[in-house]
Length: 400
Image (cartoon, rainbow, N blue to C red; front, side):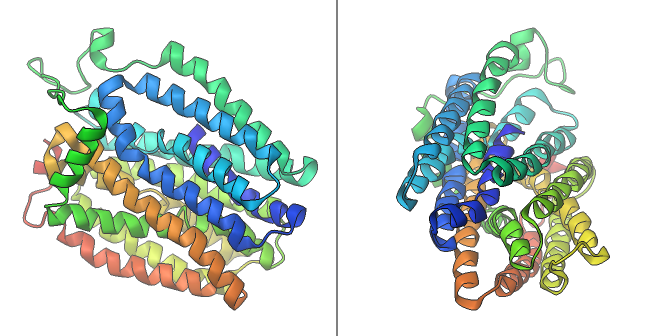
């Protein structure tokens, strides 16, 4: 929840930073793109560090890093400093608590209903967006953009004591078996490799399998069409068409509301149906939504705008539970979280390209329509390729 709120905060800063410093949208979006990229690149190493040193230490360190990076942002006066603070420092911190956190917890604590649990934990990202974005937008408009940095820094450091006192590493720590495990269940054997070597070795082995590249490519498009494009540019795109930033932030938060519903339901479906078919449906409907978006932008809230918000919200990160399930087919359950970490880097590389590329297209062409159309087309193409993942493997085998 915290990670999503911190990661999405720059989307409410784009217009205020333009007004405060006169920087171009592409300069500001470059910092956001680097933040999105590092959010992904840190994921496999964070997953490996969690395996070697424990979830608690990694998450506490990440929250402290975010707090420091966000606080230093208030002293910036040049674009490179925004890149260094929000781009690099906050990007590294949020990446260490990315969706691999949800995957690691679900894999350690649950055997039965793993898909549903993954959906619930993933939906926390939407909840974070829901809680933080409207308030941060109000702060930026009322008290200036620095108030956003101070708020993020304060919230990040306040979460640390809760992690220290309440987070438990595994069921064994409290004398339990994972939920749904048989009495003879044994935990996966820990690798003897160091955290960095484990992450790199997992990549080398995964890269030999075409299913890994199908998953990687599909998540590249997922990131490009969500956090990189809509998550970063929905508010400034709405502002371009005359909508107040606070109202646009509220609409983006509504996406978060429906994403909670959609992602939890996706987790429930993942426990029951072929995850490849679910991904086919998610990418297909997302592509159609993006094709329709330029025709309904944005000067006021019309029924079509609300239909987009609801429909797109239900689909926002619904891709995560079936993707995590399919990651188990690459190298087995022992390394599923780290495999997912590498797949998630594809998500964030796509997001970084969209965050920066959409800004370039907007500067060159005057609006975001082409960016929306390109993203929609890529989603439609991806809907076909996800059906090729682990082709011939029964979906029940993926759950073992």
